Amino acid sequence: MALLCAFVTGTSDALVKHLLVRSDERVVGWAKLLFSLPWLFLFPMVAGWPKVSPLFWEVVAIMVPLEIISYLFSLRSLRLAPLSLTMPFQAITPLLTIVTGFLIMGERVSLQGFMGILGVTVGIYVMQIELAAEGWFQPIKAMFTNRGIRLMLAAAAIYSITSTLSKRAVQLSSPLAFPFLYLGVDTLFLTPMAHQSARRSKGGLGLLPEVRTQLPLYLLSGLLTAGSFLTHCIAIQSAPVAYFISIKRLSLLVSVLYGGLVFREASFRQRVLGTVLMLLGALLITLTSS
Image 1 (cartoon, rainbow, N blue to C red):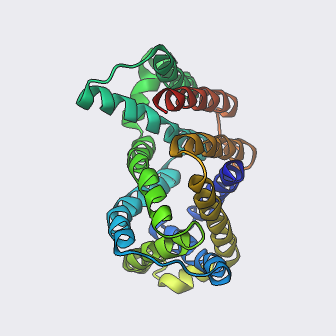
Image 2 (cartoon, rainbow, N blue to C red; image 1 turned 30 degrees about the horizontal axis):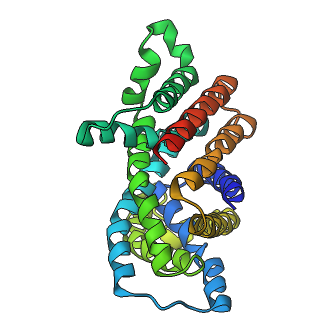
């Protein structure tokens, strides 16, 4: 399930990158969630609706603002920078966990954890190694000067929190009902933002007319989003969060492959190599902290 989730998620990211060429990230984000809801609604209808406790809604109330911020950050990142450059930076989440653990709790890093940090760092360097001609530290500095990368890093940091909360929410509901309930709330809160964005766009078509201009692609995006969330919730129910996230991160490699093979983005080979190094580093860190 985690492997299937990785493939579907990477494919969904590539389709979103295409949709963002003509529409704002708030419109794209709202539409892909909206069109996922009919698919997500079918599963609890067949399997039965679980009893949802008030604690479930308390967890969702914490998650929703974080999820929306992370969601919009990642979409804006895809709009501003190449798919094969931004998506791999989601692999930095376990590195952030080790850094905060050291700064706040004084936790020491094992040799395996250090090798993981080294793998992520070398991967970041390799992805933008062409910048080394301007200075040895330029590939690392680009993390902080490229707005698309900064937004993806912020999204990854927030995701490290919401991924754990999502497991608790699934346990308080069910893996088949949670995606519909949760994305339904997200869609509701995104609606006024998407409506305002559509009215301010170049054509000023309004939300629904703008979505209709790319309706078949939005319908496909909704199907992929539904598949991604369902496989996520089923897999996370039966595996530790750290192990599941490690497998799901293969979606980053899928995204990079789409970036090079479909969108013909530059520096493809080095970004594939850099992504593999970052994923290996993230895996070592995850296994160390498990």
